[in-house]
Picture 1 (cartoon, rainbow, N blue to C red):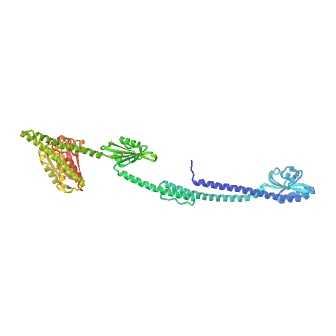
Picture 2 (picture 1 turned 180 degrees about the horizontal axis):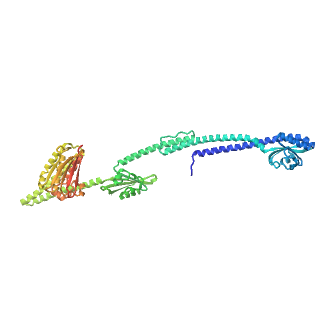
Length: 594
């Protein structure tokens, strides 16, 4: 359906109403003027007919038809009127325009008949069969000595009346045209004065719809429109305040969601995503920039999470659900996630959607596993030498041979030494962790060549026993901010491991270098290398690749863990690169800016 502007609903009806009213007035005026002219003509014809009757009556009494006809012509010529004399029997005896002998009997003419019947005068407007045109007739009686002698009729063409009316009608039509033009202008102004405020209100409402709420509407002169404008301005003000509050609330919500370490997933009743914060996207491996409105299975490709959200949609309002799932990352390690869900309920308890909160407990799970492993390893590492010591002590009580007693005492001494080494490493690790928590390790410029040389000297005895050669390569002026004792301990642990596990008659290379941001100390051996599955856990406490070989070589399982914590205490890190059959390279990273 085609819609029109409000102006066109006003202007045409107003103009049509004025035109119809003017047309009615014009028609009434024309009819009135014509009627007036006809009445005026009838009075004039009646007067002329009476005057003619007065002049013709003596001639009719004298019975002089020629004189009568001559007088009719004279009167008709002087008054520009047709004068006809009709006897009582209807015969025409005189006519100013026609020959009486050729004219019909006029007894049946309405105006003649009515006068013959006794009326004082009679008027008729009709078509003349003699002249073949419309005429106005007025008949009056002509009386003689014995009463009604004849009928005198005066007439003139109706066209004469129209001709007389023409100037007046032309003036009337000109006036009507001017009135029409004036009325069109007035109606145009009136329609515009009514429609313009409505159009302005409409334009203002469109601005409000576009969000331009600061610009208020002007107040029209009309009371009703003024109230409407005031109401719309108040509505816009309230709407602006609510939008501002909602925007602020949304910003706060987005800020909270973006800062949360927990993942948040909100869906509607059709399982379409409403909210997916950055933490959830990171946990679930979602990289799509725009997820709102998309189906959850299309965005999240983890069936356990999707199934949990589906179950949350079925909860009763106020109820919660919890579960744990393992999420397999596409290009990273698996994550263990705790899921907590609730239904989003609207008015009347209607389900609007569901909310799921994801908490990454991978680190906590891993720490818990490490704690259990640590307790188990500590128990095992301490139990083994203690059990051996206890067993050999009980055996010594029943041995008389000095040789056996000496051998058993040597074994007991070895286990006691190993037990002491474990306790010393645990105490050292505990002290390092306490320093790490306090963040108060004193650092001072340390010359790396001296530290590396002293560490190599400490390990020289065990290296000589295995035929291993330790090479140190470091620039003489290389200095880093560090704790000399702890740094030396870390290098000693790495060299000790390289000597023990690098193979006999091999070479261990210790090298130091520096960049603009950090110093690097690398310890390389040409041993059998470390399988890839052990690289991530090599720095854990009591973690051993080959437990039997490690204990045989006197390792406690804490050396690399101590190295890791010493580096963290310095604000650096310890890394390893290794391949089976290609040896291992351990690197200490020390920040220069420390």
